[in-house]
Image (cartoon, rainbow, N blue to C red):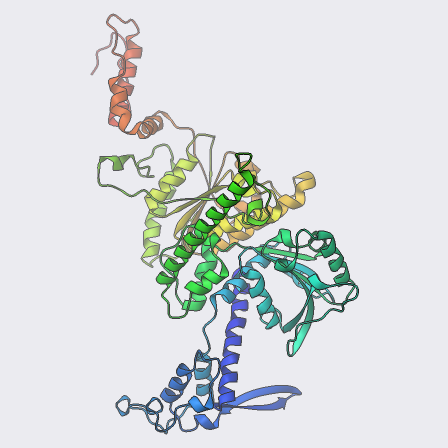
Length: 615
């Protein structure tokens, strides 16, 4: 659903860009607007204008290209008959008599529309994500917005989101109609609400913007919220840090939306919308989350390659992280110069632990073979022992992945979701790391405990979504979720039922969403498969369940051999020699045989019984 909503919002941006291009062409005389009524409704059509008459498609294209970024087309700047730009080369075979018809001209004008801005695109994507990550179903959100004067808040944890969102709102690109805003932070009993001048505004909304609110004047702000509530207008709180929004506003709001920070998924989708392409590589997740909307506007510009844009973003992220570290050190030196230590927890936002929960996951890259003897110690499914059916599943997946990459196998025809269970210590996490090396793809490793670490429901849901988004951005990749039984089953958590229900529901949505996305292998690990909500095990989710048993003797030999690595020879060399005259020769013979099996990697042969000749 988030993809459909995002595409709907991006279509609004494209439609507006096309409409602006038509307005410029109409003002210049390339198009002529005609209005009439059909069945009582106004209809607007366009025909070629006087300056388009007799011009070929090539001439029109040159005119539009010449003025694509000018914001308007000046009549005096249009090429005339003596302008070389207006006369097509005869060798190209153009015929001035073949002028564009109305439909062809309109298409050419729309193609000349200014490219989408990266900041606008990213803000729309963040808005779509905030709606889909909300605990309220979409139907309830729409119902709440249909109230005569709804109250809602939206937090986009990205620098630049607040202003960009309000600009899009005013232009009528968020709601179906332009919005005139009244500033809530200047309300008083003697002051009437004054709204911004927006021509043809369909809505009037009282806005509390986080950057305009003083956290030290909470009582005054609460009074202003009360004054706004006494009006007949909708109330909207917008911020890049939800702690800056008045608590009374968030409490009274029927809808509280939260999204951000930026991640690789948002960045890639922004590049796709603006540049028409996405890069093959990526940048670290913490680099992506450090970026601002202004950074995206700087790096992702029409005509720039996706590879170049990604490199610029990575450089900008490093600069921002260095500045943040420098500021943090300066703050620490200032606050701790007398006590000898830095004070923490005194700031809101990112420093509060709620401003940027991130995914909390660990990204593990496949080991790079060196071509030496040490390569045999790299954990791979092919070389590990004791995994049984799980190993068979992994090797089948390796073959299927090669076919998928070659384009001869569809992702939905592959087994890519697995629930792995077994007693503690049976190597479930090791299996995931070995699979990473076998498939040669990144491993995004997390756990339910990591998801639940923030505690606050909104942050937990954001962290879950960020994990899946990180895996999506790194695809093909493996997403490994440990302790997945840590998510309670729905309806069985007492007074916390609603909390856990929302978490389970969100995980179901994420698993369903990943089912429509190629390239992400999902493995959930647990010691207690019976504690998992049954809905998570249905078709399309973690439908395949494999139990890893406790290792038998042969598996233990392989496990010891793997963990001893290069120390194996030294361990065998330090083993005590069999004492002369020892009576327990059976035990000695057995130990010698087992040690030999470890050294060779072969199962131990049965030791001969006492007084029986060895064959």
